[in-house]
Length: 247
Image (cartoon, rainbow, N blue to C red):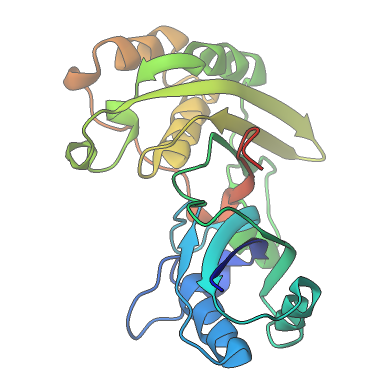
């Protein structure tokens, strides 16, 4: 009997060339498929809830795969003894037509900015160092402008790949502490590089190089602007994928 199994996965993105499988490069998907295929004795193909770029981390990524193997779910966790930088958890059986990509209702990302004069070398792959003084209140004001339903065309790399660049940002929470500025961003869906471009733009506001009105103009007149830039990949973490009431 064919089973459809969903797993939660976390990984250190600095060790991989992104989540999506690529020939000749170490990727999260390639590593998972290789190990599960060995464990289950059949070729395994996975579907991920979100694609993450090289250097981007995950705490709450999900993938599903189909198998005819009758292995108990808890034995799938033996995967973790074979891998150092990838860990799976919470395996469960889901309906045969379930897809972790297409059934996702919303996603939450965390971005960490280290806002101190200096940064330890060991932190380089896990945050973005911005040593300049930042106006956090202005950042929060601009974040409110980004919240809601907007055309994020100029907050995206290669927008022409999409039928629509309209997305809904449910909330942006800006948290400060211990030299960090953390952005928690929840939305129904995200465009390519969208979170990193949003964070870069907000930091430009914090540096007082751009204004909240400028960000609003980027959203209202999206065809007239280009992305300001994008934050480094190491500060980005996929924290959670919400499947709503389907599970």
